[in-house]
Length: 159
Image (cartoon, rainbow, N blue to C red; front, top):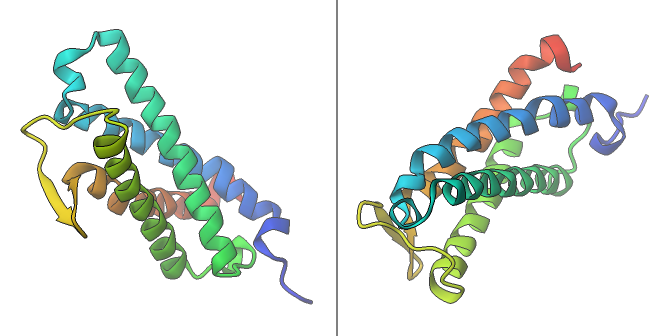
C-alpha cells in the first residue's frame, strides 16, 4: 500500500493544528512578551498598545511559522506524519522562518520604519543588513522547540 502524502493524512493535520500551532503560539507569546522591552515601543507607547503589539506579533509569528512548516513539507515531499524525517523538516522550517525574519526586520526597520530597536537590543550584521539578535534567536529556537513538543505530544492527544 502506498503511503499517503502529508496533506491527505488526518494525523498530520492533527499534529499541526493540535500540536505545532498551539505550541508555536504559546512559545512566541512568551518570547514576544520578553523581548518587547528591546524595542523603543516599550518606552514610547501605552500599556494597551504594547499589549496589542505583542498579540499582533504573536499571531503573525504563528502565521509565518505555520506557512514555513507547510512549505517545508511541500519542498521535502513529506509523507504522513508517522513517517516524517524530522531533522530535514525542522531544518527547512527554521531556515524559512529565519529568512523571512531577516527580510521583515530589514523591511520594517529600514524601508517602512514601522519600529526601531532600543539601544539595549543586541544586533548582528547579515549580508549588509543589521538585525536584532533576539528576533533571529526566536526563529532559531521557537519552531524547532514547537515541533519537538508537538512530536512528543503525539503519543497522547494528537494521533
